[in-house]
Image 1 (cartoon, helix red, strand yellow):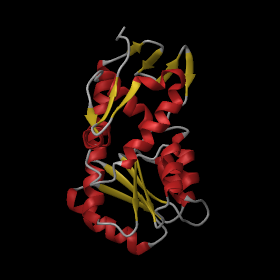
Image 2: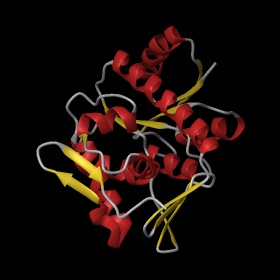
Image 3: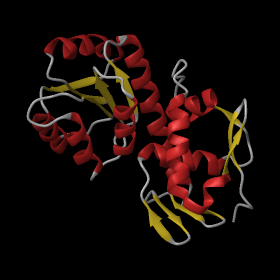
Image 4: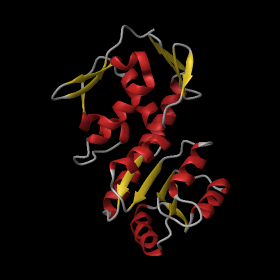
Length: 229
């Protein structure tokens, strides 16, 4: 049974999430601040963390950064703010999803289930693959390291998942909704700017190979390179 950590300083929010999450038979731990959250994380194995941004002692950004130093566990960030800057910061820190308060508990649970399924699928896929190279881009699936012209580059978890999806499906055009469904695990219900943001970040990370991710106007994106080696 999957185990979830809910981190929010508002007990009412935690209780609301617990009420809906318990209906799908997840085991639940809860923390009221960032320090307590890190203590739980250090002593337990979780399938997913729901993490509020604004908290006492240590905010959600700091907690996420600490967790990402050792783990790629899926993280859904909760925030009362919806500015684009906050979302970009979250994605750069490796947040898997981002929900602005107030939110629908049913939607949150649907996203949780989809992200966990995707995470489990990716873990199984890593057991099948070891290393792949396209032109100057090389991916070691066991270590999750990505190399560009022999240099190890730093990608956020979602950039990595987007790149590996493209590399496993070269020369195929995907709409934004298809990428959301395949990489994020569900439809963002119109928030397809999330895809554009991650495409921009990934292109910047790939440097001279940025043009391998081709924009197909009016449709979406495809990965187009010289060949799979």
